Image (cartoon, rainbow, N blue to C red; front, side, top):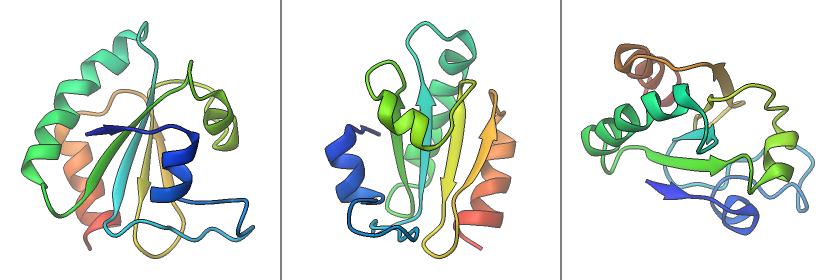
Length: 116
């Protein structure tokens, strides 16, 4: 799992300065976890994401964005509650989910959205 900054987000996910239309820049579909260190539900999701990173290694990337440190990214995706999980397929628009999801829900979203 990798923590993204504004610059690494532009390189690995989407550079809105180059294109107004969504164009995913990654080489694998990804999950992006918008979180904060003080957020209890975010802490519940963290070990699930660690497991998923291991289970789907080489198939998807999992990124984390600290909303306290990366406020511009959080506002760009209109993150109003955390955790907000963004599922980003290779083609098509990202899909967001709010709240702490159980592992089974992540696996369902991975098979439906990221690896259909």
